Amino acid sequence: MRTIQTALTAAAVALALALAPAASAREVTHSMGVADVPDAPQRVVVLTNEGTEALLAIGITPVGAVRSWLGDPWYDHIAGQMADVTVLGEESAVDLELLAALEPDLIIGTKVRHEKIYEQLSAIAPTVISERLRGDWKVNMALYAEAVGKTAEAEAAFAAYDTRLAAISEQLGEAKAEQISLVRFMAGRTRIYLKDTFAGTVLGQIGFARPASQDRDEFADEVTKERIPDFNGDRLFYFVYETGDGAADSAAAEWMADPLWAALPVVQAGKAQPVSDAIWNTAGGIIAANVMLDDIETIYGLTSTR
Image: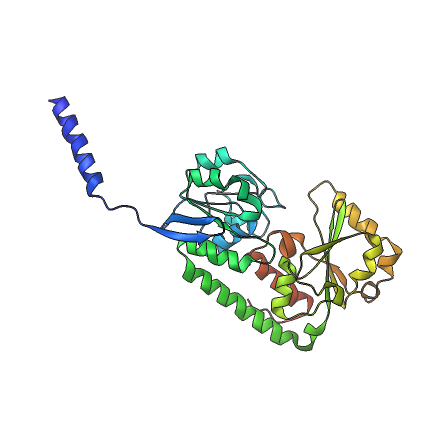
């Protein structure tokens, strides 16, 4: 009797599975091809910092994410939303075994970091890959939102951001004519940041001018101290990528002790000031972009647009 009941139960399960509708999926075209993603993915893994912000901004908390470039393990401005998220290594060193153990139904990454492991990622779950990073956070966020079925939410976030940009630009008025210089200090290297950077893109969206030597649609110039005169602008924002050993802070102090730094007109005018590397550079997503707008409002004494 038990054998008959077992057989009947197995047959019922098989019949139910046969009659059940197939899980809905959509084709999403991305930089590495086409992925068949579920209509409403429930377990999303994200492998870029800007991608993490994109998901949070449209109401999705990933089950796994790469650690923030700064923070332990998350940037301060998102840590409260990431308490239960599994750390999957870094953007450039993903823990594939731990990722697979999370059993995701969608993986989000970027070609510049993950092209070499794309096949491995795709073997774990449908994988959507953006083309690049730098100033492309809006383009990437639109792709990620399409992948998770949250395009409307992304468009609403963009609209709110664009409204803030317009209001800030109007309040600034002629102050937008200030030529803004951007410099980043790291252990062992210093860069002048150009327009194809996260901060450069946001400044451009507001309508700020840049010094002639920085008014280029490129990423950055790696410089020696002889180039300090090229740091000059009507206002200089600098950020330090300090990972905890003090090396970057020491490097920045060394540069700022140089007579060429002291001779900069922008320094003499008291318009050279530090800003957060996490917000102005490494986080790279919509949440950081909005915090950067907060900084601009504070620095220029504007009415808050939040």
